[in-house]
Every structure is written in structure tokens, then in C-alpha cells.
Length: 390
View 1: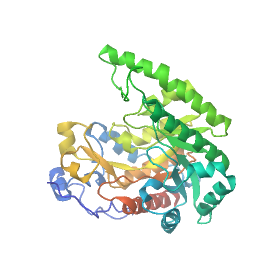
View 2: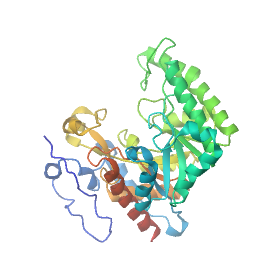
View 3: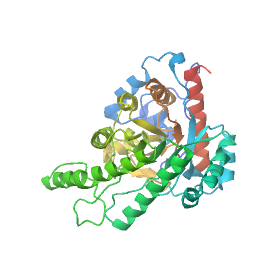
View 4: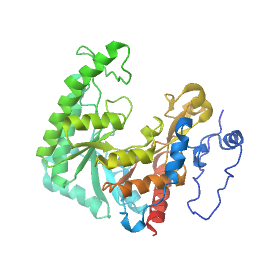
């Protein structure tokens, strides 16, 4: 059974200090010593083999002048504090020195801290709710209603559609400019009762089903949803590129954006792109230059090479019990890839003029809950300060 470290920290962020582990250490010796879980904190060992060179080159790109770079606010996505009341959560977030929050309004994140139905009925109540954040120096930057509005079960789809529309109304009341969610996934035929995620267009029946999904379900729904949002002053719908949904990578995101309009953009959660072999800096430049990044989740992914090499990347761990045979799992920022890569990532967001927030989403099975948020915040604040010369 692999030993799982509970309190290991990422590489020291000070550029003049040597790594606590020699980067020349034999790969297998390192994996044995660390249990494989922090292998990615050694520069050049952080990502799938076929993309490691691209990652290393991204980390070594020449820095842009600090004077041209904007300070991006660091925030957190609230489901990690589900066991806390609103006031207790805000005290925690304020104590961490975070500047913004992403708040769930329903769908998969639920709405533990946002009584959506009550708030949209009473503008004064909605403003009072928002003021609780502002009194602590925290901005409600985005509202999130991750769901499946094109689920083949009409009752499930209706619930998520209603939540989206109510979220738009609340965003309009509070002057929140970004709503975050999933593209959703329909069935593969009109008779299906469960979603059918199709990524490979062969045998031929899968191509036919995928074409039907986009023509009859995905594009029509999002055209209507984008118009509804636009009519209520919301022009940024940040869709998370996530497995099991129609939009799962930059190409499918842009396919929907081109069909629907510029209301469609990315919630650029790199944790889902690392395992697909994407170069994170390349993705940020590619989407950012098109003005297509509306939100950014801050979450890392660690690879376990000895398992990935045997089983491939479609072998994810969601809990500690899965780690021994997993190819990868989510980690707090800096615990999957080293500080040098995350510095390049944050700098890339600054370079493309990204004007959203860096929203910590902690789903780390080893550093769960608020502990993972604290570790990620520490890494991100130090990196941001180093880039800006603060």
C-alpha cells in the first residue's frame, strides 16, 4: 500500500533556495520516498510523459515586465465550506486574506450559503446578503450553478434550467457579471433516459449520435440560455471543460462559442486539462487571446506514473481508498505540479489580460476541506507576490 503524506508542502517558492529534494534523485527512489503523491513537485516530473517537455518549456518562458501585469484577485469556491454557516465561512475566508468568492446557487454544488429562491424575491434581502461579503472585504465575483440542463430526463433538466434562470436573475440584481456551470450532456438518441458522453466518432453510429446531440440539443439550448442571460445583462457564461459533458476541452468549448456567441466562454479549470495532456500555458494563451476565459478554478492534478503507464489516464481517484491503483487524482495547487509551472500559469493569465478571479476549488482527497484551501492560498499568494515584485 502506498504511503500517503498528510502534510507535505510544495517546493519552496523562494528562487534562491535549493529544493529540499535533489532534482537529480533517481525517479524510482523519489517515488518510493514520497509515495508518488508529490512526484509532481519536482520540476519536469509533473505531467504525463508525452507532454512533460512542453510543460517544462512553458515554465521556462521569459517573464513579461511586472509593470504590465495586473494583480488578479484570489478567491475560493464555497462548497468546501458546506459545514459552515455563511457568517462562519466568511470569517474563515477573511482570515485567509482572500479577496473574492464563487458562490454555488444550486445544481451539483448546491446552495448551502445562497438561499436563491428567497433572494430573487426580495431585492433588499439580496443586497443585505451581498453586504455580508463586502463588509469583510470580499467580492461575490461569480455565481455557480453547475448542472445538466440538457439531461434526457426532462424533470432533471427542468430543475437545472430553473436554477440557471434564477441565478441569472440574482446576478442581475447584484451586478455579478459571470455565471459558471457545465455545458451538460444529452442522451445519444431521443429515446435515451441517461446522458451519453461521446468523444470518439467511430463506429459510425457514435458519429451520428454526436451530430444529433449538437444539432438538436446542445446548440439550441445554449442559444436560448445565452439570449436569456443577455436580456438580463449577463454576458459571460463560464462553462467548465469537464469530462462527461459536451464541452470538455478547448476545442469543444470553441465549437459551442462559435455556434452560440461570445456569451460562451471558459471556466478554465486546469485540473481537467492536465490529464488530457494539455499544456496549461498554451491553453491560457490560446483561449485568452480570443477573450474566451471568463473564470478560472485553481486546482491541481497529480500523476502516479507507475499506474498511468500501465492503465492510462482514464483511471482517476476520487478518494483515498482509490489511490493505490489510480493514475491520477486532484490536489491542492502546488501539490501536483511545482511552483515554477504555477508561476508560469498565473503569469499567463496576467499576460492575456484575464480580468476574473483565481478561484480555489479544493477536491484534494489528501488535504481535504479548509486545509487544502489554506495550502493553495499560501502558494498562490506567494507566486502572485513574486510575479508582481510585492
